[in-house]
Image (tube, rainbow, N blue to C red; front, side, top):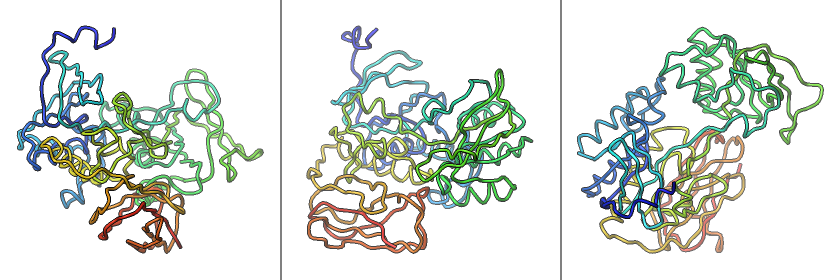
Length: 422
């Protein structure tokens, strides 16, 4: 049944700012909105508890930038939730946003019932989902024992389930690297991590701490070309790949295992964004945003992994703080000049955010990722028409797995391009 059919008799609840998602970005967005003056802030979280993916990340490494100390994922979530509680921010858990319209009307189904909410501004903070086996089309049978890395993390860390005895991991994203170590702690033998690209997909520190420190091999430019087994995984076939990512004939070998973990990428969760008519970037899979993190739909903002994938949760939280502040200002009636200038990714840069800026914008920060590992790199931000350089920063090394940031303190009058030079 269409959720709109029987809603005409329902009363409409009004809110200043509604945040969809209670993970590290959403919680921070609520704090940013409240601290910027929004009195009526609501967080809608579909899980029963706040924190999102943080709750299953029992390793440390969180909070170094936001709280100036290293804590675990659950501790990071708890601190953010406590901050939200102290601010008196409304929270609804176990609640699903079924629909979001372009005029910021939300249809929510929760444990307290079905309701309509009209928001002055909305912050999208729904996070992301994992790529599955079907998305990367691995041939073979369909036995038990094939997990996405995040699903395995949930089973092991939250449900205390032993998922197998001998494991192979396809993909070297951060969750896959962390799970290689976690499975080793649980007594499983991790026989190898295989990565399609010629460089690791996760942070260098995770390669060192999760693989090298435990003697777990990492084979780059390799992939799984077949899964074997009837009721349970019995083995996988791996092969080297060429420069185009295609398997090289004659390099196949069989690895006996009963478990295969897939750490092959994350996708921003933007189904609600599409329903609201938000323009999405084909490069990031997230919304196209301006310097205030507002999407193409007025009054709708985006932050965290639903905007673009972050390798550090603290960065998602800082982005959430900024989005929440912008949402509060919009709800209070503050409007800024339309963002007509474009920010383009140039040589060896995969993408740059924000995508658009207002004429005369100054003192802003750009986030970007490069296309390949580069040593002694210089990032240059210039106006595309005049060629005028507005910012330049040298890096000893930049990696595709690491989100980088650069501050611009000059006024912008033309479209920008972000490029990387050696």
